[in-house]
Amino acid sequence: MTHRPVLLAPTAAVGADLDAWLQNGGAEGLRHALAAPERIIPALARAGLRGMGGAGFPTHRKWSSVAGQSAGDKYVLCNGNEDEPGTFKDRHLLSASPHQVIEGALIAAVAVDANHVLLYVNPHQHEALKSTRAAIEQWRASGLLAPIERRLGLRLALDVVESSGRYIGGEETAVIATIEGGFPFPRRKPPYPAESGVHGRPTLINNVETLANVTHILRHGADWYRALGIGEACGTKLYSLSGDVLEPGLFELPMGTSLRELVFTHGGGMLGPLAFKAVFTGGPSNTLLTADDLDVALDFDSVAQRGSRLGTGAMIVISAGTSIVRKVAEYVDFFAAGSCGQCTPCKTGTYQLSRLLRRIDTGVGVQADLRALESLCALLPGSGRCGLVDGAVTVVRSSMQQFREEYERQLID
Image 1 (cartoon, one colour):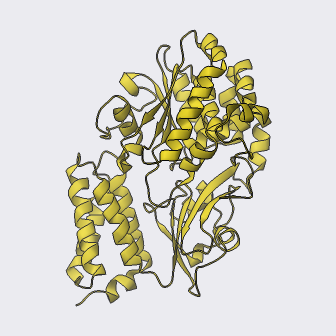
Image 2 (spheres, one colour):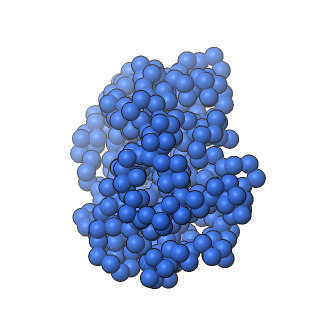
Image 3 (cartoon, helix red, strand yellow):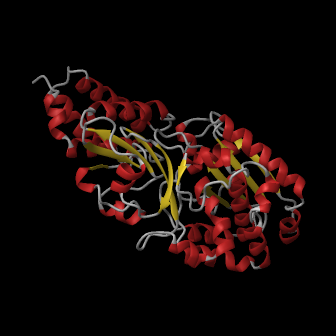
């Protein structure tokens, strides 16, 4: 499913076989890390690695925050909850090539002196969960953990934790709550996980794809990784392409590949005779891009300059024959169902957004409904403990700005 493999695509016949991974250069990055732990974080800084789970936060800054905390129990959490529509990269990595993810997490443990490494996996992703568990058993039996334990002076705990399987369970403080045995309620920040995470201890949380890059950077060098990107962008990116395209799938391409190339070269162009209309970038919680944005470079900074976010790299393509109002209604339904209910503005606000959108989509909406949508979009941002309600508002507000005429046409007054 991965096109033009550059970095993260599993080598043929490796998969979840640790011996095959080692024969293809696996554990070399870990050996470099153990030989010079003080060089790990500077190498990530020079490489320009950023978080691939959505925010694009510089990885070295997050690692430095945890490394700078006092000694004792520390945690590295690999976040593989992945439950947002249109995003399917992490489950592929965990299913087809879990060893590079585990090795990246172990390198993180060496860098920040963490003695707990937990892979947090969505239980609905059965193959990913099965493959990750099998891979961890192989690492435990391999003897490769012993050098890490000698460096730490502590026993290293390496394990899998099933997430709640809920969308909100991927928010980083909800990850912590789940691992502590509670319901995945997001928590207010500060304190941030780097200071007070699992059981109050310093905690590093990274996305699956972020950690999968680490061993390659340590093995080949920061300059090599930077050169894989286009222009100022660094490395490669997994783009989850879906929607109205001929060849949807997961494509590993240089970071900075244009939206036009992704859709029309790698995705085979539009499904049927209808023209490109829009794309939900990074999943359905961001600002929509339109045909005017087809030449945007798909990297964090370039997409941000267009008023959107690269997010997870998910690209849900919409053709001219698809109703924007209906697609937005479907996604807001998802957010409303995914609200944990902890914050009243989020619980009731997403429900009301969903109700109003369904009225307009089904042809019974009036001008007052459109005004109510606009009012909610002004009132709701920042009202929750996490970004769920903000994401719902973003896609509604963006769709009304870009496709206002579609909303107007479906009103009955």
